[in-house]
Image (cartoon, helix red, strand yellow):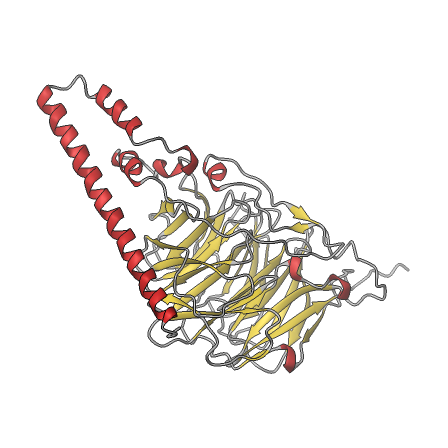
Length: 498
């Protein structure tokens, strides 16, 4: 008789989760109590950022990974927002740049000093204003430099070029209700979103079109999440009609029925999925749970394979995950999570036990590195590129980061580009480096208006000069306010107030 194997073979079946000891945790941190289903935490190979309680505005803490133990109450924070911070995200192409979205309707991008903060950081590199309600989602483009997506409670998705502080695309008619989350695909050509109307949408941001939509992906009324997998499939978490938590896998080519659907339990915390594209393992953390479940996604049915559960005593308020290039390959570490308690942050390492001390090629295929594959202008022009991969064989060593420079486009030139009615901000797709002198457009406008009567030419010229003057005044006013703020900050520093 032949006996069929009941247990499926997988090298991740025995992934072992272990919390670090207290002296390697981050103690006495007042984690934010804002009622928003964000992770409240973001981490990269250099820094750990945590959204914290702050009086009179919004703040988050940025700690060098080595600064473990008790964190002093007077430790400097990033505190430029006037409302509570709802979401933060490290730039994948610069470990010293972080974006934050807040209840004050703004998105701010910050440059963290190489060795961490020594004084409170109140001046962002750039402030992005375009939302009319609080901003609950910020996420960087995976392969294009300086491209940032933000989504707010005004149901609008904005895509920015942080390098020029301009709005590239505004998608304001695709979501009729609150957006729960947004996830880019592997090369950043599409993103998927989960919405309060129970629909999962796949959207092409450059065309502003809906590629695919699945209504009632999960029947329950509680928050859903949707993420893109490396092969283009979509993984969702949500609730059934009976409020049971569910996982589902979808094929964007056919969203009629899920490829796989699993029910987990009947807890009420939203499930936050973290996906590792190198190993095809998904870690699912529930808000308020004390466990992390992990699943392997395969190409054959039943597609979603439960691997194991890491359980601890304390419930989690939020969770951050280290990028693959920040892991310790010598210990066969395949994931590291930063679990937020009420007053502390606890690292949890996930390892695959191996007897050999040699580099494990099967656990560490080449992973996404810190270099951008495209510039923002190239992506806007229609190009796509897969992430640039690096090998972890020699263990990743962070290189010197370049500062984020914001070169605002010529406002006078922009005024003409935007004065003409355009369907989806076509003016924004002109790269900053190709802006022409102010005199160039005026010559073309005069030649085109030569056929007008003399009076018409005069009024058109007057209107143009007035518009330029108004924009110039606005620019001068902004620079004056900025100089005043810097002088005030310099005065405080000289007096020893900071």
